[in-house]
Image (cartoon, helix red, strand yellow):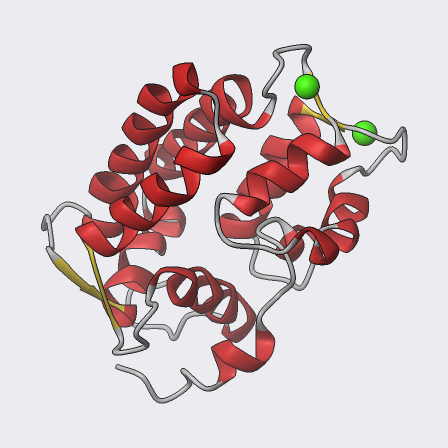
Length: 192
Ligand SMILES: [Ca+2]
Ligand SMILES: [Ca+2]
């Protein structure tokens, strides 16, 4: 993809759906504290005490690396976010960084009891961290459990996560973060 080419529409919709998860007042800007405070307040309810430190490190790293980006933006607009996420097509290390991040995320957070698999309950709690209602979780769980054995392996988890951010086509990986918020994201169409 050349720098001047428009980003693929479906991929942009996916990025928008993440952005709106954190832009709670819908003003088109996400600040570090919007994201970090929201994650922390949810995590206090859903994570074990000993997971909190690792979780907040991951959240802050995600902010610095994937949101604020090399320019270390403090107020991230949708346009900034899309530009920073599109580094995944320009710089191979960005995709590797994402993969690494989700491996750690699986080990320390999503697989709560550390048995190497994510059960329905664990995945529900993982999506609960982002405000997804448990009733909305099953379609995502089915989409991620690609071999249909009733749980999500680390490979299935990381593949779906990477697919969400790096795949431009409409694949089941779009459900990684819960229901795909097509309607809400479409209302952001004109957002700069
Ligand atoms: Ca587990
Ligand atoms: Ca599976």
